[in-house]
Length: 311
Image (cartoon, rainbow, N blue to C red; front, side):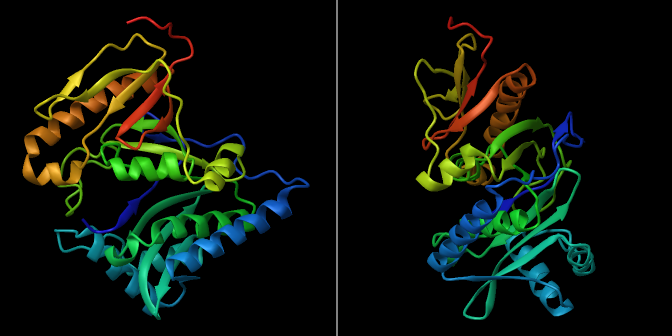
């Protein structure tokens, strides 16, 4: 599939956007060092990916960005995912509208808009040949440096909780935290990625100056503690979702290895996974469960401090 990341929305409850009580990164003696370190990490990631980043301002740049987004996301109704004029407005209002360039050609783009929380990152598109070279990570690190430069300490976005590679990237590689489960957040999405199914999303919060984020970026991966974890949802021998006990304090919630391919090969089974994950994960999160990690083999770790270890 085409390289892409998806993001949007502020901290929300029940799908309604709400403000944070601390929308901006608080100034302190460590702030200049934090910004300098973020800039250095972002620059190193860009060099490793072989790209340079630049904010987009001209209509020509907006046209290129809109075209790249459409090539990756493949809208099937003839309308652009994001109109060129709206990209121009977002840029003019101080939003994050940034292109990644390789050999003078735009190969990635990311769009975010300012909010009461700080910044929410709405959509990104990355061309396949450079995805494996770390362009997606480089974009997010550039976004982090951009935000801290402006005194913004929090970025939010959404992703499809059934997409394993995005879950691993967001939670394990970036150190973002799953803040809420949003049921059918966008309604039916008629593009080549979402296949018009329910658009359930996980809202993540990326605390840019947080200790967890710093340690994750430094180590490369956040590894969850799985001691005593019990599988509450996982694939059966036939690939169908199988429910397990939910009485343990630590629960593992599995998802398909490639839900996007499954939507093409077996739409019915993909729909079963959507329903099963929604029923289990949204219920756990709504009742105090915290998603504290995602494993390389495709399991969310959910911890419920008030739950006793019994099954």
